[in-house]
Image (tube, rainbow, N blue to C red; front, side, top):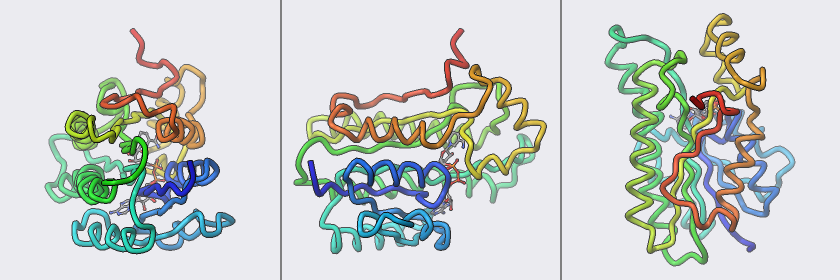
Length: 244
Ligand SMILES: NC(=O)c1ccc[n+]([C@@H]2O[C@H](COP(=O)([O-])OP(=O)(O)OC[C@H]3O[C@@H](n4cnc5c(N)ncnc54)[C@H](O)[C@@H]3O)[C@@H](O)[C@H]2O)c1
């Protein structure tokens, strides 16, 4: 299939860059959304017209709608949306400031919610099974590791949105899934102290963190025709760490 348009949020980050580049390799045109203009431009290095950078603060609904209006005008529609923008704030309960809690929910969950609302309208009338892939986290499911509760809750909210939209849009042929990775080597590792990071990596069964390219391959699979028959699933990627 040619001429498919994917929107990848957080496309300037570790996972977003790998996902964007993988989808371009698979023949899609990727519109990368991020707040970080310099790193977003670097994601497009060597990709030519197949990568379009758009700067937006995705916690701002107006900015999201403006970005998708531009996509409607310039690309004509959306075939796939990857909600990947996110961060992990590390204050711990019961001393998480209200402002940090609100920012955590806004960056990880509200951004995805706004993007789903805008993208689904632009998926109408497109060919084939259209796709939404939400980048969740093992932190919503594994309570042995370090993740603070506002981070876990933001990803659990995202996964409930995945299931709602999967059910709501199944007969419209929009497939919605979450991918929930564990430790993946990206700039986000910088929020952890060395001790916490080493402990979390040593708990990985393969003795190493996962790589952004490994997650990108799963996103690409879901967006490929092979992914057409999966919807409403939360796919846990953690080398088998939490099997009991
Ligand atoms: N790295 C891991 O181990 C890991 C594990 C589980 C889940 N995740 C999830 O993977 C996703 C990608 O994370 P990453 O590891 O690549 O981190 P990253 O920090 O490298 O990338 C995150 C990107 O999101 C962008 N972003 C943040 N706030 C934004 C906003 N308001 N508007 C637009 N863009 C914004 C950042 O600029 C950055 O480019 C996140 O949702 C994260 O929660 C990561």
